[in-house]
Image (cartoon, rainbow, N blue to C red):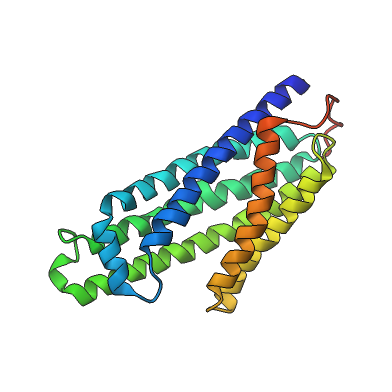
Length: 236
């Protein structure tokens, strides 16, 4: 039984690493270099001049969200022995965050490309309108990203509790994932309640989530689980 769990843990680590690479590329590199907040002209020019990269960013995100659906199921199977109900709720929140909300939010990414394109739907309405609509969709994508982050923050909180209680993982990973949860939730609610602090909040979630998720990913990938013991009886 434990060999099966260890294999699932290592598969989860591999898929999680792919998600980090794909999502980091699309959010950190593609949109991070193309989308210039409060500068519609520069953003429009960047999208037009880097159209292929912008499209690759969308595909990269989509692949990451598809892999995240598999990760949700695998984490449930690994941690259901701790608390089956909590593990199921954690899986549901992760499925809602990325495979559902974030995937649908990619429509805003796609529509930004369509409005920016010289042959797109807005090309005949003038440069100023193109810039305005492109920024509207890019800002809408950012808002959708934050909404997904709230659901993912709850997932990380529940995951942190499960990891802390599980005999299969060092308790430090539970603490780190709880910190990541705080970062995600602070970024989402902080941006909506106190706008204008996007950069600071981005650093907070980047550090907390980066440490928590990356460290857990490599532990899963390299070691799998902590010990060769039969998981405790499932609690409802």
